[in-house]
Length: 500
Ligand code: DQQ
Image (tube, rainbow, N blue to C red):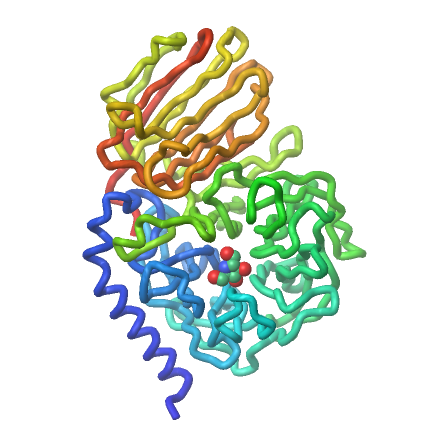
């Protein structure tokens, strides 16, 4: 009988061989990101185990090494970085080699404990769980490492073998953090149509005590909460979750709930909630605090059941840019591009104030790169246009373009992918007022197959994958039925040597 350790090594070797065979094909894909994290080959979905350990940022992720599809019995892919921008790929950290995780080493988190790196993850016992099956069994498991590379699963696994009565067989995605005098964990679940975040505590990461339901859907926030994350923000607390339906505008989405934490009741008193990201391709977000105490978020920059044109090149899935999570003066959650990203800026273009008048759209032939940051400040106080915006990744005939538009009468900001190229199309948007000085500020991050838009310094963010023709690199500003003043516009070509 092969010892478990040997089996783990066998699967690790098989995974490495499979990835090695696909890397040439992967790197020939014109849609391969230049400065976003993506797997070396194969499939990735959720980021897991974000942690700073022994001087490095660790990133783990849901991974299927044998093809660009969700293979079911997921592994934990692994990479490390000194700066959250340049990543080094490592061998898979967890393989589905045990009875309690043979259907997948599902999502989870990581903490440092007594000098060890501890991964807490969901063991999915039956692989066919994603096809309707009443054989769904999910348990919580522990694996530890002293070098941050080779992980050993706890002999006592699973450390939590069944959900509480308030939960259900959907019982996954533990997020662990250190409290005042013990460890806490939220686990995603759902019961009778109400998504929930279940709370546990522990002194040693092995023995867990159930404390109750930390937060649950008000009936409109989804029936199952995946990838929950609970943390303080200013004098409030935030619960992030990736619920699934039903919602009128999406099957799945990511939300954040802002409220007051009731320590005695171990629960979050909801005060407000909204979508965490207004784009289509943002899911399974996870945060962690870095050595400077900053709260940093990463999310899977894709979405279940979306077409993934990169699959023909042997890979699928990427992560968003790392974002700083902060609290605005009005008490909203805001998300800003990590300041370190400015180190990617290379050639700089800067334009003083100008007007964009309808029927005379202006183009920028010098701005034709597939890895760019663009910052524009519009002055709404003097705007008489019905709508205005920027079209990016335009083909010469404008048949292909992705539009970021502001509809003035509705105070609505939208990203329109109906003509973005391959992949999922559609328009998604949100209400957004001009800031107090009457301006609307947009920061766009273009990579070869993605567009992230940060509006009004992170009050609203839109994340989308787009798969334009590589030659569609033109940019155009436009206004309809009137004019709008651009107070300033700047652009930077971004470093091309990134990614992993
Ligand atoms: N993906 C993981 C689950 C999680 C889901 C499996 C969210 O643990 O609930 O790959 O995308």
